[in-house]
Length: 90
Image (cartoon, rainbow, N blue to C red):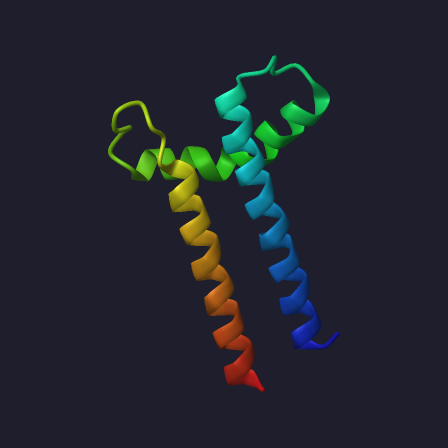
């Protein structure tokens, strides 16, 4: 497989994960019942990265969880590193 294709697939996965985090943030404002299958799926997919970010951050400020922001920054750094790696190998 071509390296550009692999980077494109990983970038697409990062985009999808970003939108799942955005959906989770919006869902957290609405506070629906969490037993709905779609909501459970979003929580189960995003929780591993968000829980890691919560361990890195010192805590919430005024009951605001900044772990989604840190997760998005992390995802964008990973994307930038992958693009830089792909460019250096070409």
